[in-house]
Amino acid sequence: MIDDGIIDIWCNPFTPEGLAKFSGSQAATVASELFNREYMYDVERTAVSPDEFVADMDEHGVEQAFIPALQFGDPNGGLQIEVPYDLVADLCATHPDRFKGMAGINPRTGMEGVALLEEYVEDHGFIAGHLEPYGWDLPLNHRKLYPFYAKCAELGVPVVMQVGHSAMKMPSKHGKPLLVDDLAIDFPGLDIVASHTGWPWSQELEAIAWKHDNVYMATTAHAPKYWEENVVQFIRTRGQDKSLFGTDWPVLDYEESLSQIEEYGFDESVVQKLLSDNARTVFDV
Image 1 (cartoon, helix red, strand yellow):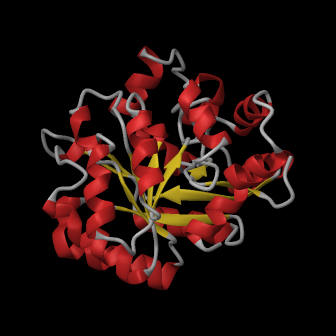
Image 2 (image 1 turned 90 degrees about the vertical axis):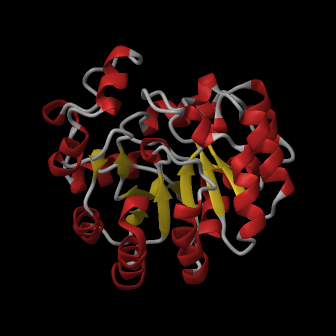
């Protein structure tokens, strides 16, 4: 499909140990009740080994997948999902040229969490910070998150965050794309990858990405056949240098995602940027 290998900027851990971290969470409930895909987080049916996942990547021309040490809080206390940093580091070590880790942000950990993020970027090769804002009941521009943003800027790594609504029973207002405007202004040296297309406020996200050199839109978790017309037009035209591809596996897989992208008939240069070049620029891989 493209000259260089595809980069998947958000792929959740796929091993039995990794996928088990999602069991019992609202993510599993949403998959079953809203998506009618109760098998999505079923360890026995869905989990695979690193070698098996790499084989699937090879089959579809995917060169690298970025795996978050996902930290998804619960507004009532505790965490809905906690993927340990060392689990992701060990997974990436099985195929260090194919898997890269992202350091999940838990604002409740304060400066200890900032130090942990720095450790895993510097000592374990993690390539980004990663934020799910909804479960902390904090907006994207809350002061408790700023030390993490500042550390990412200092380390020269981007931060990947879900932007838009949450399908979980949590306040979606915390993910409004307009909040990213503050982050881009306050951290001009920090690349911000706003994921999940910002839906249902995708036009708002496009405006922020168009405005700021350091803001990008990622198509993670949204099947291409469901992309809004404005999202398709943004990728095709003025957003072609600001759009990145990701699956949020197991929400999407490579077969369905890539075949649906082909249906749009994008120019080759646009597909090259979406699936590969833009991610290489942002993540320096």
